[in-house]
Amino acid sequence: MFELEIPGFGLVRLEHLVTDFTGTLSVDGKLIPGVKERLNKISEFLKIHVLTADTFGKAKEALSGINCEIHILQGKDQDLQKEKFVKNLGADKVIAFGNGNNDRKMLKVAKIGVAVLLEEGCSVEALCSADILVKSILDGLDLLLNPLRLKATLRF
Image (cartoon, rainbow, N blue to C red):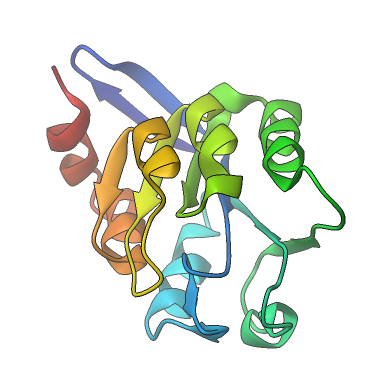
């Protein structure tokens, strides 16, 4: 569990990290260097779930050796599937990372939604649904490894 009191934002008690893969943890299906180590460190205190349409068909291979659950989404309404997944975990216990239109609903319902801006870009809908924008997934994951950064960004 991750716990942090943020003035004006309230008490944050997280149990889950939910993230997109394509354009969030990876570029062109290739995991960003440094992600594996950070996710494994975070998995010591949060359960990690990767929700992906797996655009490049490389998610399972890229995520091998990472302590996480991988969920390959099928069909339409992936934005609704991701939102429902977060709600079923208990949205107030989730930090979510994403960059696309299909991430916007999970970013909105999660206790903390983090929009990630990599080479693929970040949809305006995802950005407007998030609490934080980071310039890389490494910066986003480091918010959990260096909690005072998270506190500084979200406090009122």
